[in-house]
Length: 417
Image 1 (spheres, rainbow, N blue to C red):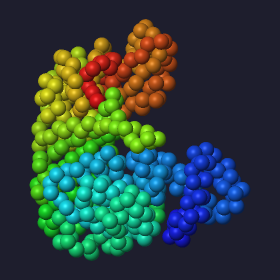
Image 2 (image 1 turned 180 degrees about the vertical axis):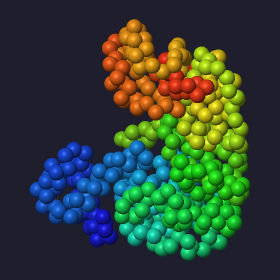
Image 3 (image 1 turned 90 degrees about the vertical axis):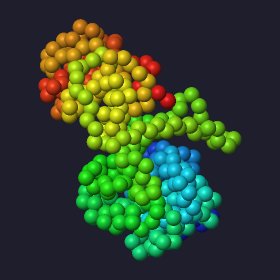
Image 4 (image 1 turned 180 degrees about the horizontal axis):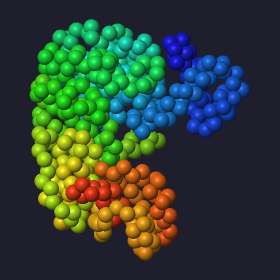
C-alpha cells in the first residue's frame, strides 16, 4: 500500500469499501476481489481494502478486538508486539515513573499505543512514510492521538534528552525482501546506536530477537525472555535504572476459568497471569538419573539460561548436562514447564519402540524432542501406529546416548493457569 491508496481508504468511500471487504474476506481471494469489483470498486482500491481486511483478521490474535480498526502492513504486523506483552511492558515503565517516552522505529505503533494507554506521552519516530502514516491513524482510531504522535524521520537523529525513556525495536528484516538480518550492526537502527542509549537516557528498553546471543547483552543490562501460552515471542533488554536482575523469564498464561468482560456485543478477553523466574543465567543444574517425572521447561526459561533455577524449585536434576529436560521424584505445579510421568525408558530402537507401542495399542502420540536428529513426522509414519490409546514420546539423550522415554501428561502438575 502506498500513501495514495491509504488516503483513499481514509475517505468515506474508502471506509465503505473496507467494510465491504471485511464481509467478503477470509475465503477465496479471487472471489472476494470479484465481489468488490461487481460493486464498481476500482481494482487498486479493492486490492488495498482486501489486504487490510485480511491483515486485520490475522491481527486479532495479537491485538484483540482493536485490530478491526487498525491499519496494517504485512511486515509491520509480523514484527509488532502482542498487546498482552506491550501492555505489561508499559505498566512496568509507568511503575518506574516514566512520563515521556520516545519510540524509535515505532512501526505500526503497538508498543507506543500500550504506553499511551498507561498514561505515558509517546513520541514515535518511523523512517518509512507509509508506516508512519498508519501508526498515526492507529493512534487516532484508539483515541490516543493526544498521547502518541508520530514523525517520519531518522530514529538516530531524535533528541532523546526530551524524554525520560526510550523504547527501540530495531528492524531485523531487510526492507523490500523481508529476509532476516543476522548481523546486529545491520539492524535499523544499528546495534551500536541501540546499545549506546543506556548512557543517554535513564530508562532505555530494547526489544530483541529471542535467539539473541547472550554475548551481545550489554554489561549491567537485564535480559528478559517472554513467552505467551508456551510460545516464545520476544526478548527485551532493560537497561540503566530499569535493570533489576541479570536474567528474567516471563511466562504469560491466560486464565482458563476467567475472562475480562468487554462492552456489550464484544467478546470477553481472557485474563492473563504473569509468572516470573529470575537468576544470573550462569548456574549449571545438577546431573542425575532419569526419574519418574519429566519437566519440559518453558522456552523462555531455556533461552534465559534459568533451567538450574527451575530445577531448584522442583528438586529436579538433568539426565544429560546439555539437554534441558528436568527429572524429579514427585510432580509439582509450576507455570514454567510441562510435566510428564515416565513409564518406560529405553535406548532408541525403531523396531523395539514400534513393537512396544503395538503391544500397548497406542494409536496417537505426541512427540517431544531435545538433542535428537529424528524428524517427528517421519518417526510417526515409521511407527505405523494402530490402537485406541494415547502416549507421549520424548526423544532425547541420557548420558550422551540416544534414548526414548514413553510417558503421559500429569493432570494438575505443570503449566497451571
